[in-house]
Length: 255
Image (tube, rainbow, N blue to C red):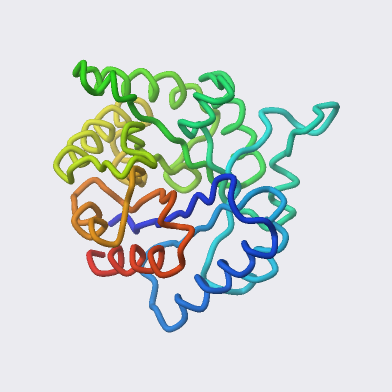
């Protein structure tokens, strides 16, 4: 049985002091819980060391929101995966819709980044999902298929242990809109079937697929209770300890 993951993507929010404060609140809130899955926080680069110090030896895992597609060298402004590993990160988010839209990143970039993540012994969280106009046109399955096919078959060493998938209906990120649990489950099930043809049925059955689109304590239990939804990649709600912990408790309840 797949264990859940609840991952907080803090995006471009919280400097070291505020990030450390939130990390402390989250870690304290997990005390006494017999976690049935994984809880991950992904602060900004500059806040990673401060958060790492707070959660060291605790139940909270540490991730980064992005990484370089290359090894060390003359790449001004980039952060390599080896640096992230040394700083205490175990996970890296790759291909978030905001990286696709804001930075024009491509499948080639994602393949290179994930291969770098895996080579460093870290786990990649690969994001995929359709835009609003694609959903309205009924093309969501075609978009998901193209995004998965553009990356997964090209990875050097993807396994259910070093790869997590995250379906993002882009129209539901930061908008307050949420795909219904039925809509989310439908795409998750389709995605798992597609992944089966790319990395094998056994691996597809074991890989976790998170839902990322305005998850809140009020809808998390219904979403996470679906057969192919294995937790969430949480944006805005991850910035408030009470909400984030409420989502974790929902994941616990259905696990």
